[in-house]
Amino acid sequence: MDGHALAYRAFFAIRSLSSPDGSATNAIYGFIRMLGRMQSKVHPTHLIVVWDGGLAKERTALLPEYKAQRPEMPRNLESQLDQIVDYLCAACIYSLLREGCEADDDIAVLARQAVEGGLEVVIASSDKDFMQLVSPEIRLLNPNDKTDTLWGPAEVKTKTGVEPTQIVDWLSLIGDAVDNIPGVPGVGAKTAADLLRQFGSIDAVYRRLAEVGSERLRSNLQASEGAVRRNQRLVRLNCEVPFEVSLEELACKPVDHAVLRQLYARWGFKTLLRELEQTRLPAGELFQETAVAC
Image 1 (cartoon, rainbow, N blue to C red):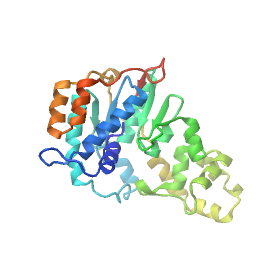
Image 2: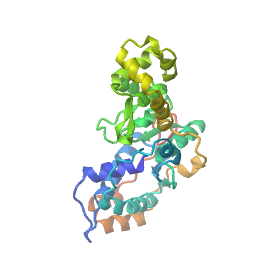
Image 3: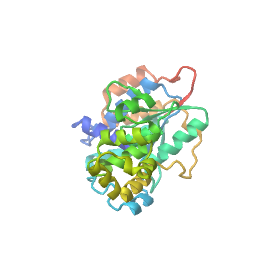
């Protein structure tokens, strides 16, 4: 799970909620509810929440403006993050934050390790960068999607017009306004998909640039080659980040009911208190016969 993305989503989805002492709890409550809904959907055997620990130095070296336009985190959200981690601890859910590392890269490493360990993976995030990881073993669950669709290669192709293996090139051509990465002028999602369907890759586009039919498009591509090559390095997730978290550490475990009761009482979550006494989170398998890490 992409921790910051889910926390932001929860914070803005529930605009007004506070504890008995007046402290904001909207992000905490929304986070718990969305996490529970996704657990009910996929019934994971393993679970980890990964947080951003800052921007990767190699990306800011390539593009100093990388993500520079993003506004500061709202104070009322920032004040709730440590308490969300308190919840994760009480729920016995592994929480990972590594200073100077982006969550996307750490999630990419974890997904690779899980697949190598024989698991199928669900990445819970709305970040389109993760589409490059999608495969028969790795799928996406968008917390913003009320249909709870698990995105595989077919869904990625339907959405973008390209295969998951082409997503890095597709994003490199169109750019990413969210991350402040400029694309090729005049190249949107459809044009980029058309180019990659015709040529297969950015390398082939530039080898066969004379075959691009539109003179204006050909000129823009030629003028932007340096930026496109840079974008490939910015967009591609780093699956080689050196760190080790064992799959055993990520296995779902029983929650600490006593600590959760204390937290829910402090936050004034009466409904969650009642539910805690009545039910336990289910444990099981996502794909019937195959264990899952998410």
